[in-house]
Structures are given as C-alpha cells and as structure tokens.
Image (tube, rainbow, N blue to C red; front, side, top):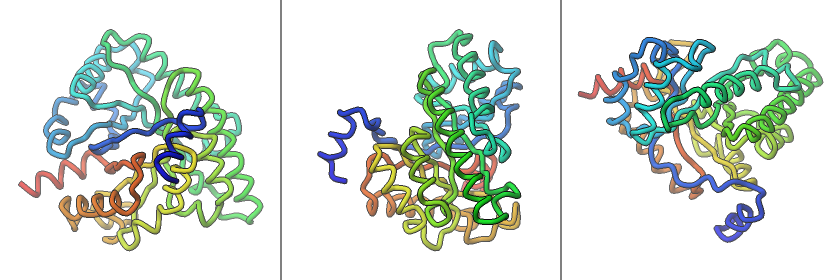
Length: 284
C-alpha cells in the first residue's frame, strides 16, 4: 500500500495513523515494580535502551493507590507510554471478551482516580489460546476456538474504544498458516495493533511478512517483539532469543526489518525487563 493510499485510509476513518515510534516497548511482568514503588530502578535500563513504552502487569490493588500515581507520573513525564499487560489462555474461550473487558474497567478506574496528568494509554492483550487443549484437538475444534477468541477480541475492542483506550494484541507468528481468515479478522476488527512474537532469528522478515501486510492494509500498528531470555528457559533454544547474540545484533535486525518493510506503523518491543537488564549489565 502506497503512502497516498494509506493516508486516504486514515482520512476516511478506516484506520488510525500508527505514527512513528522510535524507541522500544518493554514488557514488565513484575507487578511489584508498581506495588512496592521499586520502579525508579528501571530508569537506567529505559534510558540505555531507549524505551518509550512500558507494558506493565497491573492488579486490582492499584487503582487509587499512591504508588500507581507515582509510577504513571514518573514515566509519562519522561515521555514513556504505559499500557496494562494482561491475559490468560482461558480468556480465548470467552466470546464476549469478559475478562479483557474487566481489565479495561480496572484501567479506566485507575485513570479516573489518578492524581497526575499522565494516564495509562491502553492494554496489551496476551491471551495465547494456542496453549489450550482445543488447539491440539481436531481441525474443527481449533477453528471454533480461534473464532471464539476473535469474537472476544472484537467485543473487547469495542469496549476499549468506548473508554478511549488503545488495544494491542499479542500473537504468535503462525496464525497466518493455521488460521489466516481469523488472523485477518483480528487485525481488522479486534485491535489497534498486533504485537508479533517474532521469536526465531532464522527468518524474522518472512515470519511476520503477512502480519505487516495486514497491518498496513487496515492502518494498524504492528510490533515486532524480540525475545531476550536465556536459552534453556521455557524450552527456548539459542535461535529463539538474542541472549547470546547480544543487543548489537538485535539492533542490526531492527534496522534491516525497518528498511525491508518500510512501514511507518512498524515498531519494536523487548521481552522482557529482567533479561534486558541482565544483558545491559553484561555489556558494561
């Protein structure tokens, strides 16, 4: 899709202008970074790696708390966007998007109670229905699971727009092979953008080529997520992560993908805070 066509798409309201994003998103799975007020220790990592978005696990304890006020104020003043991070495989069975809607309700409550000008920008939905038994059942069971999941995302996305929240959806690289029609439905109707878990260095471009094409077609964001955990953890092999390759190699990959895709809506994220800190410490 050319620049003029993309611009026309945004002007007609069929998509949102993703806009340029120069830094990295960063997953933060430790809710105690907020609850214990320990987030200041993240500053050095964020500065060194040019982090401009945090995907932070939140909890029902946080709305109205001074620690959440301080967390949001601290990072938004630095120009860092904050998203709630949530999801369980079982949420893929919810055709009405019930649990995702609950998470958005919590974020909306938190935003209303914040005493700072900063706000939580949206939600990153990390549901992963392919971890359920139905995924390994018959083709019909898998298709039904994915259709239910897509419907739940669509319903949750309606809720996100009503609340003025952005909704990003984490997906693996293989939906274009297993459920291409459902993948297109998710991109078109179920999110503001997709975050692709591009966890194999063998063919990073090819693994998300279809996803970028769909994002461009519908004027959505697309985020390439890099894995940083040590091989051997969670069945990861060396080819799945940049732990041994290092951050310089990762940066070369990013530059290559930016040039080859040439899509302004493409950005990048790192999984996740603790291994990133470990890599940065090793490189000192």
